[in-house]
Image (cartoon, rainbow, N blue to C red; front, top):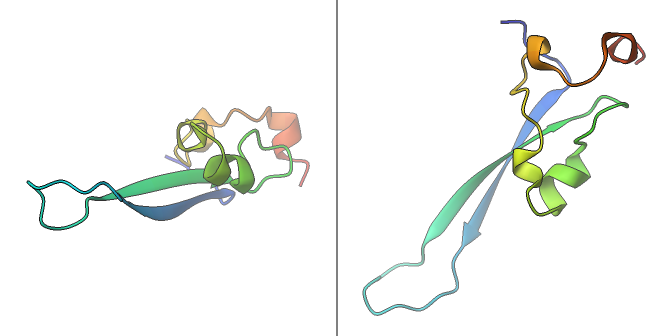
Length: 77
């Protein structure tokens, strides 16, 4: 698998503010937010980290074979 140099991933920890008697500590969820810093990217950092469903928008996983950017645009840096 060829790894894309434009692929990045940000980790966000979200702590639940819900108070429940059956839970002694706050519930913490860890989200992996993948994004692409290519100028033709469909999922730049602002989309991945600030929009609902943004964490699921980039499906390539850093693989050049699965890249949604057309090859002619991928060469346009």
